[in-house]
Image 1 (cartoon, rainbow, N blue to C red):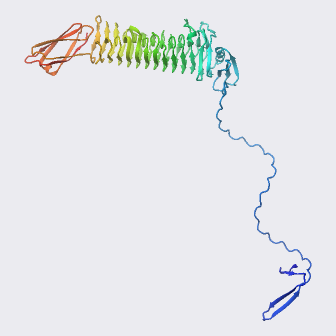
Image 2: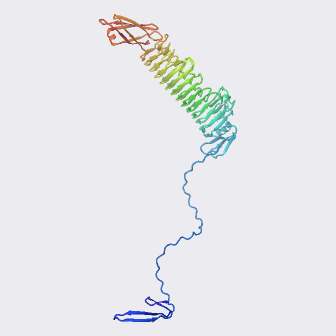
Image 3: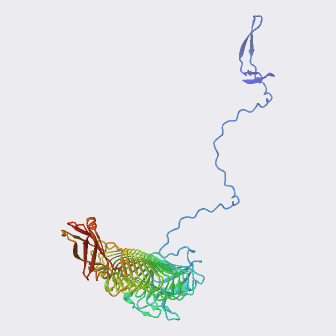
Length: 571
């Protein structure tokens, strides 16, 4: 069959087969025409018709496979730097990052010491002699710097002598701004038979030594003092200003742990631990001024000493326990010291001993069981000098000695508490113009307060109430011009019962003084006071006798009470 399209676009199917088609046509006039056609053979192919309009777009097909990679583009600009990552863990004896110090000093496992440069990380020196290598590093720091020590043991041997024949291990000479600082576990140990200053600081300023342990190895060295030569841990000679030693440990040192010699000012020894040393742990020698030993902990050792012409120095808030030497725990021979807030417990020697005429403040110290190996006239606090201001201290118990001994002139003793001492609470020992005021003194043996041939001393407003002392306040014969009055508890209370109604009644009582009273003041109960017109008294070395006189027309009460008979020395 062929499809033919006429000029109106109507297609007609033409079959090549001999087929008869009957078409019935209805007309407008009602006739039906029946036509029959016979199909002829297929005609020739017609011309191609015009292209029709495009149909709607179909759905997207599946993605085909990726093509080959194109060429690399140009490099872009660098982005902002990210934050630093956490540091990794160093291996054994690994070198640390550079820049936190001038030199890092450590020890290899084979015992060789090394010094790493803090600028480029190179190893500058290595040696089996620790002090020799450290001295190379120190000497190179002419403009100051920090030497950091890794934890480990550094044996310090004798490396030579100065022009003044001072033996030394590590030597800081004519330097400034040097810091020697250890990691936890950094130990300097003096070698056997070396007898040197482990660190000798000579005419250097602003030196700091921090967190290093010093072992003086006293079992294998000797106690040597020869000129400036001492077997010690740290010694400063010459002009050494603003030296700081802190957070260090010192033990088994033959002589001084830290000694400051020569002309120096502004030095600070603070927050260190001293123990088991053979001589004074801290010593401030001649011409050391405006320097301080503070917050140090000292045990089973000796203590702190100021001597020579040292001046304006301070000993503040140190703790000294179980002092093992018969020398004083704190000893001062210098001028204008401040000794404040220290705690001294169980000292074989005197607790605090000062000497000289300089003005000193000794304040708020706590002394317990001091001078245990001493005998009178030593004591827990011994003032062998003048112009001391002693206030707010507590003294509890001593060996066979006194609480506070005054052997100088013009001292002020005020507001202290002293108790339990075996040989006087306070004794003024044959001097003059001392003032003993407002102190609480009780339960001492045999006297609480004694003026021994004193001259022009004042003992007033002290509290000896409730004391078990045989004699509370005493002035020995031989003195003059002393005033003893207005002291609380310095009284004898007596009650006399069943006194007959007479015109005069005499009675006696022990006064508890060391010698004859020279003033007796009595007070009476109200009934007795109304009945008497006066009284007289007399005294022996042991008793006071009082006679009361009955007023005209009055009768003594059956029981007469003397409220107090206050025996005082009022020259």
